[in-house]
Image 1 (cartoon, one colour):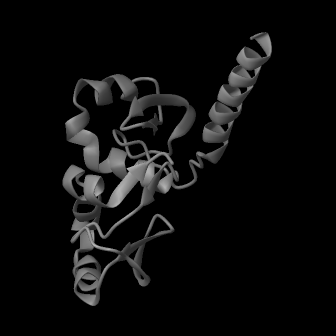
Image 2: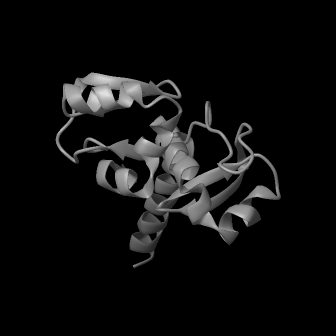
Amino acid sequence: MTKKILLTLAAAIAAVSMLTAEVDLAGAMCPIAGEQAMKGLAVDYKGGKVYFCCAGCPETFQGNPEAYAVAANKQLFVTGQAKQIACPFSGGAVDSTKSVKVAGKAVSFCCDNCLGSAKEAGDKLDEMLFSDEAFDKAFKVGD
């Protein structure tokens, strides 16, 4: 029985360590202030963690996460916590040759029409890709 508990504990520690090691904050911006996010300042969000630039931002976020959803969802993608599983516009299967870069990471689309919409979006691209509706359709947090 003790051996089983120790193995379970070791597996849990390894899983937490692996999750922590996978989070790369390069290019991850605080959803509140827009500054570089830091590892020590995070809150749980959609099965992942959202990181902040200073001690005041987590409380602001938790007070109204819906207001910061686009930036928080984008951060989940940029940090590798969210993986793309479908086209953010159609929900269809993606073609990796039809993609745009977001913070240095590729977001792919199902067809030339969706790719064209993304390329024409300009400063509305983040909202189009990472609104809760698009994010929930196209990205999955965790494994």
